Amino acid sequence: MQTGTTHPQPRRPEAGEVLAELGTPQARANPYPVYARLREIEPVYATPGGQVYLTRYQDCVSVIRDSSFHAQNADYMDRVRPDWREHPGLRATTESFVFRDPPEHTRLRRCVAPAFTQYRAVAIQDQIERLTTGVLDAIEEQGADGGQVDLHEILAARLPIGVVGHVLGVPEPDHPTLRGPLEGLRLAVDGTTGTPESTAIIDAAGTALLDYFAGLVAERRRAPKQDVISSLAAAADEGALTENEVLQTLTLVFSAAIESMVDMLLNGLGPLLRHPDQAALLRADPSRVYAAVEEMLRYDTPVQAMARIAGRDTEIGGVAVPKDSIVLMMLGAGNRDPDAFPEPDVFDITRQPGNSVLSFGGGVHHCLGAPLARLEAAVFLPALLARFPHLRLDGEPERRGFVLRGFARFPVAVR
Figure 1 (cartoon, rainbow, N blue to C red):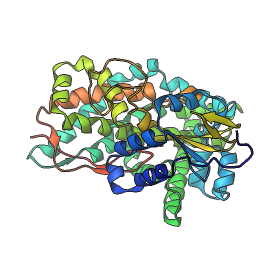
Figure 2: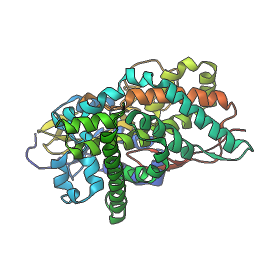
Figure 3: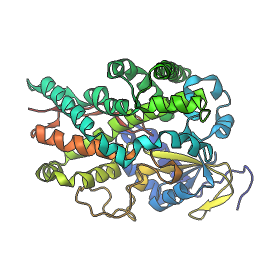
Figure 4: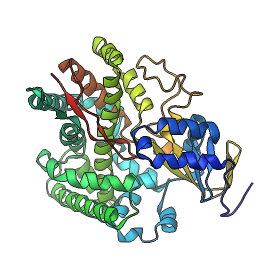
């Protein structure tokens, strides 16, 4: 086994050519054939630069569950981007609990976790239903004359931001002004930090959200409410959190819950509209919705990749992985692994339960908002299909992102 900082060498040079295809417009539209070829050629592909790409389900699961693999923490950022602390947008993400390991990760996550349990999600179902009705009304109004409706714009402005805003305590009148910073901070998580232009956008977004939450925390100290912002402010006053940790936690949870949820809903709706037989099944029997949501998450997951850092020399699938190598679990590829999901390229909401989807990660870093996300989708999608029996795509949706896979536009017609 190789040791130190020596990087593993690729065994099949053609795997590098396949991997490079992920940067093409064709792969942005549909990366799954590329994943399949890479899985066939080199399922554990180690690049000369020390990155290891995993495309098999079981390999991804093994890393997710292995605590010797670390998050992309501050030590990692010091190696790859030494100036990151000079950029407020990068600090807002890198110093948040998602990019920390236990015990710090555990301490910070514990402060917000109670608000995102299955019990708490069900407790606000009425609020989700109210917001869903508002979305459906807006769709009907815009599409009444047979015109095109951009479902991305309506969802991003109303549903996920309304749900997580209710949980955290973000006033509804403030939502429109926060849309721009939310879009900007998305670039940091999507890995788009390599140019001065993108870094400037991320920094402006991070500064705007941190400043906004600083004002809201101060307001809650003067007049506490029954919300997460008030509880985090109290935790800081008691010495359990620093002020920066409060603001970074709020910024992370708010932005992640909104951007990834819009992606999840539209990535799931896309195959439903392209497979009318499946939409008909869900319309006829809305009780299928939870199975349908799992299939949507599997078929086109909104988070395509997750990175971990090897904390020791190890092996994955017989390939040497030296300490400090960055291991990229291609969750979208694992969710289409035929060894885990038979006929993986078939979209089937009647798929029998089997392996759990990788879409929410796992282990200590399992997505905090998974119960709320599943419920939000389970409320919205059947209601949308029932309200608009003639709902269809009205043009080709415009893709965006790679790590965070979603849409910039999603045109539909309802008449």
